[in-house]
Image (tube, helix red, strand yellow):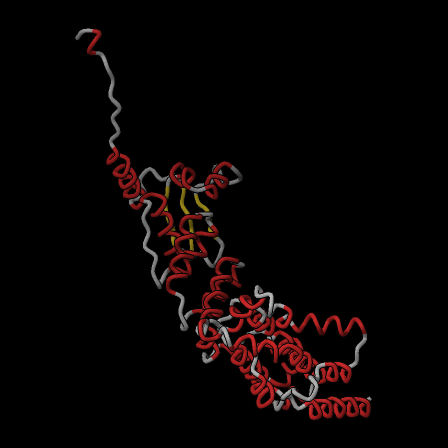
Length: 347
């Protein structure tokens, strides 16, 4: 051949790469040329250190550290099952794994333990696509037990978007106070304010002796100023638990400061945003110069009132609107006065 014909070619046999790993996995299953064994739940699983180290920092650190000369290692994490460990070892050889309803929980826990981030990510993706009313508490339990922030956020997102269905479930009444606060205070809660109020009252009354102390904080988190005057008058004000709590009555009085102006502003816009929850709608109103002031969070007003030392009676008097207010102010002030007298007598 002449110099003019000299050249070179790059040849890559891709099939050899996959077939070699398949061959190595077959050897592993037959315990051929293996230099490490793992004892998982009484089951021994063989492998090759070089393969595991090349795919996992967890195994690489293990084999170059204190266990470099070990031939048998006992995996003592009780949450790592033989099945999940075997599936993940197979994955390191074949790059293939099947995630389903039966193994997703154990694969998620094992992949986190073995620092296999790609498998962990796929497990979270599977849970996100399959979370429903029947398993959302299982998702929470896995998140809490293993401190998985992404999974906790997935649980919260599901509950917030499906709040009305969750409230009807058997597990809702077992929610913790901290979780209730996290849900009720969220801007992403897909529920009308009346529905949020009714849900906290149902939760409180389920175990009233233990939960009554939670009433002021939960009630304060309800955006009362987004309710209709009729609902505040007919439902909220008539609730005995509210009438018996001076702090909650004070929040109720404060809410009336903005209800009238806000309700008038909402009338003109509701026809085009009827499918938006109050919480979402309130964000839009806050960007409207004409209504921004009237939809301030009444919690801020309460805090300013407490700093200035304004009394409960003064608060109710300040919220009167020249006799045009529909709210029964005399009744509210009488309730507050009776509460004060009762508390003084008890002291």
